[in-house]
Amino acid sequence: MPRLLTILICLLLLAGAVVASEIKVTIGQGELREIVGYSHAEPGKVYLILPLKIENNGYDAVDFSPAYCKITAEGFRYGDASIGQSLAQSGRPPLNGNTTLKNRENIEGYMAFEIPTGTIKYALTFQPSANDSYKIVYVRHM
Image (cartoon, rainbow, N blue to C red):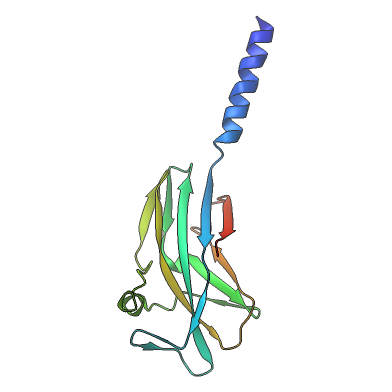
């Protein structure tokens, strides 16, 4: 009987490891544009347009807001450029609303960040809440 109990505990531990919760952020190929729809970047800046997919895999609920996405470039952090209508006008469905993703739900769309012209390296971060310690996995999709 103790051996059966040990095997059962091991199986439960393995099952728990397989269904570990995570938020998966898939980042597509970025585009740099001075003009998007009717929006013009400020002098010395361009819009970095990114296709994103954010998936909740295992958490009861994960809040999404464009404010939770930041770009770090050249040592500075940049928030959403808030040009959702211009993205839509240019044929790119924007991620411009707040929503809650339940387990196994995802959202897809585009976000734009206004960054300095000539920026080559950048990093996207998604931080749903300052108080929660979510496991976030970033995947580049070209």
